[in-house]
Length: 392
Ligand SMILES: Cc1cc2nc3c(=O)[nH]c(=O)nc-3n(C[C@H](O)[C@H](O)[C@H](O)COP(=O)(O)OP(=O)(O)OC[C@H]3O[C@@H](n4cnc5c(N)ncnc54)[C@H](O)[C@@H]3O)c2cc1C
Image (cartoon, rainbow, N blue to C red; front, side):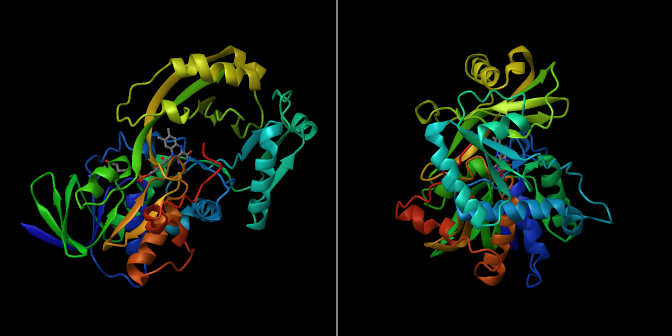
């Protein structure tokens, strides 16, 4: 049997569910939305395996503005996503980000600071002396300065946000179905229907590709080459015997990060490009902690000399190999196929802005709240990178 929906969304994690919510919530939309998700337990998606943090300290204005809306949305979650008077529990901790710089890295920090301040980000540049006063547990002998987010940045329950979007979208009438989209069937310059792994097909007015690391394979079924690769990242959870007070999410000049999580901390690091192959497995390489992270962390926080890893997991970034920014919106050859892929490690915080943007593209035919045109396919097809400097 063949069904018809106005919008079919492939992938129902945070991006697909945000799109479903914003569509159902759009005053001009009265259609039917179907979200197709093979893993309703969300065991393996990036959303539930993420470090679940929001920062405003980006170098690209679009990324800054999307995260600003992300914070606004999270702080007002009850107004947006309450169902029967019950708001999602996100446990947002507004702990801030602290980007540390050695002397060669300081000009980059200062340039980013100027862009961030112009866009109203509450961020302060700290000299080493101020750093010592504020964070006495930090080794600053090799540091020339730092950038501290003063408000709006922090971390939250990623699964809570995903469930909140999903629950509210369903309450507003969106349907979810457990299946995998295996084909996008073209008719001229549009996708007429999608085929599923259970053998059925669904006719559609528009399709949103929100399939995370599955997005490239899906796009290929319509003959579209999406430059997105799956790259493995590890998160290690550790405890420290010494109390570290007022710890933000710290980004070390090496690229390693750590932040408080419950009674302990989480940490991670992205490998060098040459050592970062396409990868889909979930095996954790503990030598990354022993050989890379631990020495780096112990150098930065001497109390971390005596830490103990309690658990670890792997997840996958959907990396846009052109410029580490999302590819958002319709493909020029297929106007009713919209993309939201290639988040490269910062998609959770962008989910509210991207969901809203996708709903505007479908319902209004263009961006209304925030112009995200620079993140569209044009730059990809022209090979013109919109480079984000602050990639973690
Ligand atoms: C270790 C790690 C740390 C991170 N830390 C942060 C952070 O601190 N802050 C931040 O903002 N972001 C972070 N991210 C990135 C963030 O998690 C992702 O950008 C975001 O979750 C992407 O959401 P998504 O819905 O697009 O993809 P996913 O969460 O990966 O979901 C994609 C969904 O699509 C489904 N799917 C796949 N193929 C198909 C198909 N053919 N048909 C139908 N469905 C399909 C999958 O089952 C999956 O549920 C991190 C990611 C990782 C891995």
